[in-house]
Image (cartoon, rainbow, N blue to C red; front, side, top):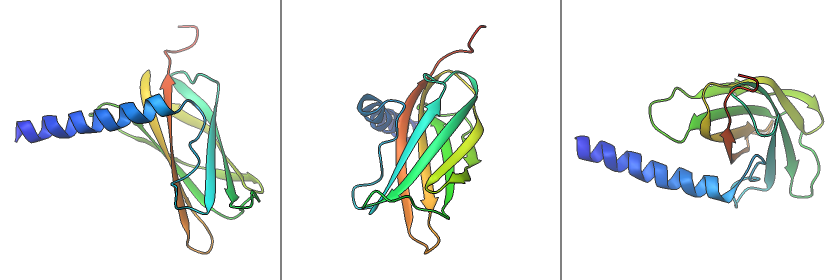
Length: 138
């Protein structure tokens, strides 16, 4: 039982390390088969422990903004044992959604999974890797 747990942890770490090497604080778009694009940006950059502002843009294959989607962001640390941070974005402008106080609970490597469900039922998913630094000023 313990060996299978360790194997899962090692595999997950290797996958997440690959994601972290391939991206920064900007979203990776969406899965290759999707006709939509999700981009995520984080403010401040680099993000620090505590609240951060997330801005998500959702566009179609022509680059036009997509309105009326339900967007949820789930943040997970790259190591096992941390409770994920999950928050729902609010529409701000056509194709632009925001979360004003997404709370990073710990410094280290994070993967943010952004999931969008469109009004017609289509869905899109993207992952963004980022490194969260310790609290600013303390």
